[in-house]
Amino acid sequence: MSPVKVISRGLKLSHLDVVEAAIRVVGVSFAIYQIISVVVLLQPFSAHLNTHLTFALTLIFLSLMRKSKRQQPILWLLLLLALISTGYLRFFHDELILRMGFPNTLDLVMGILLIGVIFEANRRGFGLPLCILLVGVVIYVYFGHYLSGPFHLANFSIEEMATKAFMIPGAGIFGTPLSISAKYIFLFVLFASILNATGSTRAIMVLGKLAGRHIRSGPAMTAILTSSLIGTSVGSASANIAITGSFTIPLMKKFGYTPDQAGAIECAASNGGQLMPPVMGAVAFLMAAYTGVSYLTVIVIAIVPALLYYASIALYVQLQAVKAGLGAGQSGVNDVIDYRDVIVFGPAFLIPLIVIVTILIMGYTPMYAAALGIISSILISLARKETRISLKQWVQALTEGAIIGAQISTTLAIIGMIVSFLVMSGFGFIMSKVVVSVAAISAPLALIFTAVLSIILGMGVPTTGAYIIVATLIAPTLVRLGTPLLSAHFFVFYFAIVALVTPPVAPAAVQAAAMSGGSFWKTGIEAFKVSSAAFLIPFLMVWAPIVMLIWTGIPSLIAAIVTIPVMILGLQVTLVGQYILLCNWAHRLLAGASCGLLVLFWPTGNYTALFVGLGLFAFLTWWQLREKHRLEKEADE
Image 1 (cartoon, one colour):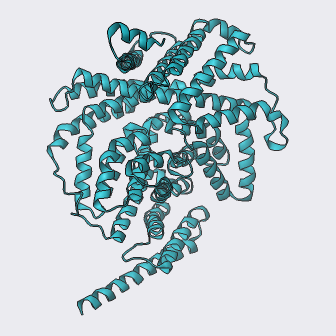
Image 2 (cartoon, helix red, strand yellow):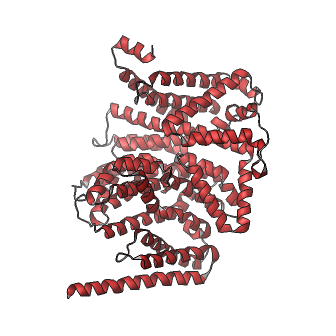
Image 3 (spheres, helix red, strand yellow):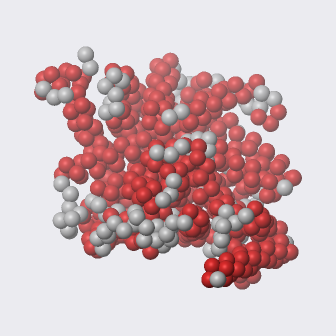
C-alpha cells in the first residue's frame, strides 16, 4: 500500500490532498531554506549542493504525482531511491573523498542509482532531448577509444567515469551548473514567481495594451512589449509564453492574425526576454562568472543587441499587419484599460528590479541581490491592499517558484555530467581543432559552423543549461581564433537561445502552437522567420564591436547607424513581402540583395558592397514610392 493511502485512510483525505499538502510543505521549505542559506552558513557548500538536489528531486516527483494517479507507485519508488542515493552521498561524503578514483561496489551502485533518478526526473519533466544527449555523450566517452581519426579518445573505465560523475567535488552532478543553481538561479526563479503572484506584472500588461491600441500591429506589439519586460526576470521562454501568451495570443487571433502567426509572434517575443537586460533570465550572472567580467559590463553590452532584436520583431509584425490589412482600433485592442494599474502595480515590479541592479552594481553577490530582491518584493506588496496577497497565495507562489527552480536544478545536474564527461574526454580540444581547420578555409565559415553547432547543442535544453554547454565547449574556441571574449560568449549564447524556436525541436514553438491552436510546423517556421534577426545580430557582435558599445572609432559608428537599420529592414521586407506596398519577386530580390551586401561589408570592409547595398535599397524605396504615387493618382481620377 502506498504512503498516500495509509495517510489518507487515517485522516480521511483523498490521495490528491495528501500529495498537494506534501508539495506545499516541501516547496515552501525549499524556498525558505534557500533564502536563509544566503545569510547564514547552515552547512558546508558541498553538503548544501546535496541538500539542494535532494529538495529538487523530492519536489519534482511529488509534483508529477498531480498528473497521474496510475503513476504514483513508481513515482514514490523513484522518490525513495532519490532520498537513499543522496543520503548515502551526504553521510559518507568524507569516505567518498578518500576513495576518489577507486569507488567500491556500493559507491558505484549508489552513484549510478542517483544518475538514473536524475535522468528519469528530467525525462518526465523536460522530455527526451537532454536525456538523449547524456546517453550519447556517455556512449561516446566510453567507446570513443574504438574510433579513429580526430574523434579518437583515450580508454576510460567505469570507475573513472563514475568518479567524474558524482565523487569529485565541483564536477559532474555537483559541478558548476548545479552550484550556480543553488547559489542564485533558484532565487531568481523564486523572485519571478513572487512578482507574478503579487500582480506586479499587470502594470507591464497595461503598457503593452496601450501600445497595441495606437500601433498598426495592435496586440502583436502588446506581446512584444510585455514579453520583453516580463521575460527578463522569468528566465524561461515557456514560462514567459504561459504568462503573457494567455492574453496576447487570443487577442492577436481576435485582431486578425492567424493562429500560426499569433503563436509564432508570442514565441519569438517570449524567447527574446532572455536576451533583455538587466536579468537576462539569470544568464547575465552566469556570463559574468564564466568570463570574469563584472555583471554591469555584461548588461551594458547586452542592451543594443537586445533592442535590435525586438526592433526587428516589431518591424516584422508591423509589415505583416500592413500586408494583411489589419489596423489600429480594430476589434481586439479596444478593451478597457485601467491606467490605475500602472500606478498601483508598477512600483511592485520596478522597485525590486532596481534593488537587484543597485546591489549588483555595488559589488555584492548575485545570491545576495536576489535575496534582497525577494525581500523588497514582499515588503512592497504589503504596502497596498491590491498587491497584498493571502497566506495561501504566498504558499502557492513559493511552491510554484520552487517547482520551476527544482526542474532547472535537475536539468543543470544532467548538464554538469555532460560537461564533465566532455571535458574529461578532451572533446572541447577536438572541436577546437575542427573549427580551426574550418577557419583556415574561411573565418566567416568557421563562425557559421560554430553557430550551427551552438543551435544543435541548445536544442531542447533550458536557457541556463544551453548557455553553460556552449560557453564551456564552443566559446573558448572562438576566443582562440581571436574573437573578443564577450563577443564569443554572446555569439554562442544567442544561437543556443534561438534553438528554442528553431525546428525540428523548437520546444517554445510547441507550447505556443498548443496555446494558439495552430500547427507546430507552421508556427515553428513562422517563429523562425519572426526571430530571423537573432541569426544576424551575433555575427554583428563579432564583426561590428560598436554594437556591443565597444568604441572602434567614428567611421564604425556612422557605418553601424547607417547600415544596420537598412540591413534589418531589408531582411524583414524579404521575408514578409511587404514594404511601402506589397512586394513582387523583384522587390524582394532587391531587398534581399541589399541586406546580403550590407552584411558582407562588415567582415570584409568592402565599401563597394556598402554603397551598392545602400543604393539597391534606395532604388527599391524610390520604385515603391513612385508606384504608390501612381496608384493614388489613379484612385483620385
